[in-house]
Image 1 (cartoon, rainbow, N blue to C red):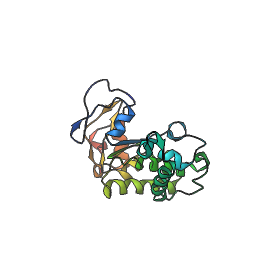
Image 2: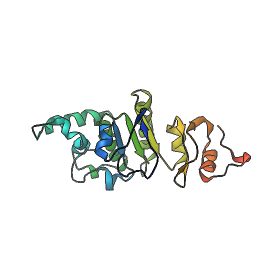
Image 3: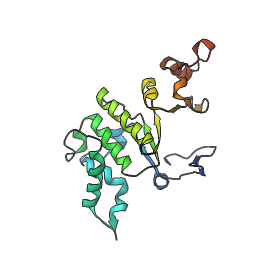
Image 4: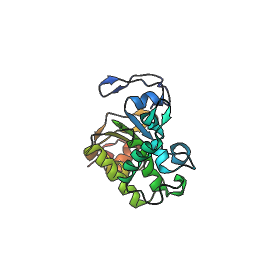
Length: 205
């Protein structure tokens, strides 16, 4: 996302060299990011869900330095309404439940029309019902809208629920190339992540 500079190696994005120097460059390349720390990094307290969602795309709704705020909020409303956010979305966003705050942040990312969506612990601290809704949103984005979605999660069950392919990282290193999710069980994935690769503990479907 351009937040940190890589120390070595190269990246490609959709078969082209990719080396963002800032989040703004990453956004121009079609990348959107949802942080795991929504209260610290995800939204601005005191503003509603519409204004929060529209913040990254205000340039799209400005002309000669004047922001067409009504148009920006209308676009944000159209996206947020598809996510079934419960609660008063016109009140300060911190008054929404954690799950509905997270759905609002997903809406903020979707308003950017991403080609690649990075989700860091997307269901952290939310209830089971809303977690299932977010899993469904992720599946629809990938399978119906063609968005490439990278989900980082410490929950094995969540990985198996949302992933098409799984890549395990340990101690800052990618253990191997991504493999089909069917190659893993919860126990097998956990053991793989911990480095226990004896024959008796190989991941199984």
